[in-house]
Structures are given as C-alpha cells and as structure tokens.
Image (cartoon, rainbow, N blue to C red; front, side):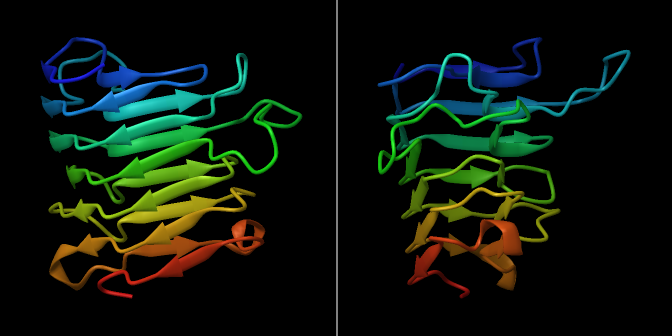
Length: 172
C-alpha cells in the first residue's frame, strides 16, 4: 500500500496489517479521534496483533502519522505460544517515518520481537517517550531516531532487554 491519504476513516485505525511481505510506504494518516464512539477506541496509524497468521517481513517506511489520538504503531501479541516468525527475520522494519500522535508514546510493542526502528522523527503533545518496548519484545533495534522536546526516545522493560540494541538516538 502506498501514497494513500487516510482521514477520519470510521474504524479508528489508519491501517491494520497481518501476514508477511507487506510494504507500507509513502502514506499520510491524520486526524483520527477517539471522540464520537460509544466505547472509545485507541486510534492508531498502524496496528497488528496476535499471530494467526504470523506477521513478519513487514516494512513500514516513508509515512506520516499526525494528530491520531493514540499511537503511530502498535504491535501486540497476547496469544499463547511463539509469534510464528522465523528466527532472525525482522518482524517489522519501521524506518524513515514522521510520527506526531497524541498518545503517551508513538510506538508500542508488547510481546512483539525482532522489530527494527530506525531514522524516524517523533513528536507529539503528550509523549512520555517515543518508543515503549515491553513484555518480552526481545531482539529489537532502535537506531538513529529523533524525538522532539527532550522526551526520551526509548523505554525498554527488563523482559525485553535480551538482544536489544540502540545507537545514535537523540535524545539518547
């Protein structure tokens, strides 16, 4: 999917993706609010969850996410068992994107291993950190990202530290 402009799309997420080999490039997603729903959702620009089918070898690059009430990217796997991705294969490569959501973080990874996050620009009025990596999201790489306003670039819990690498982020 490329060169799409998604605005106020009604389901509260810009794009949901599942499976392998997707290339999501050059899109603009903006102005998705949680207001107006009976049970407010958490609007995200890009979302995947669980592992049936397995999601890996996905590239999200050159996109813009603005004024979306939750996150730029959320990837969560709350099903028991492994993610289904082959060992050593990046599940998601998130590169060269501009993220300015309204949530506490721009990227939220929960139980989602082997994600590469590089060369992105993060900002937003409510950011506590640009990237949150938790609950066994092992093997993630965070390189050369910029976060506005002195907000920390990445917050990683102990369960996600194995295989974690970071370098060249500003602020560190």
